[in-house]
Length: 201
Image (cartoon, rainbow, N blue to C red; front, side, top):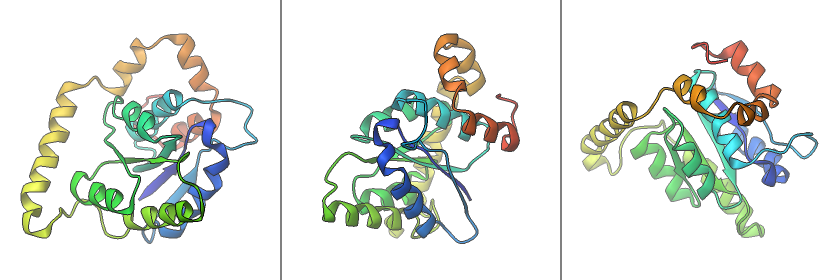
């Protein structure tokens, strides 16, 4: 699994924490890539900007899964779910992370990075990432209803696919000025160019 870490500039101070925690718990054989945003980056990227970059990373096949977030985690989750082909969960707790991975089997998770970062908050964050990657994705839960849960997940993915534009169609309809700002995130754009498979760039 190729896992990307990227979050809004408003939470740049948490980037190293996210990256190191994902590396700690990522499944064996996974590659983890850090796309920022970091405190020493010149650019400033909102959760909207980052959601488009996430759509590009996943839509191009450059990565398989994204760990992201913003102050509340909610805005990033909503923005990511507006991107073609992205199924993003919201995981404020270990249980939410585990159930998303097992039932919804999506390709992105959004974390509330601005909330409750006392000692207990950091422990919760660690346990949330651990739970997310504790078992292979998409096994269903509870096990007694796994077949039905997995069938529902596949139906949802098919409905989303038929109800959305492709990522290329979406990009062609977005304001070019907005996309100019997105293109300035060169680490992501260059990574997609080198590792993506569908010619989005």
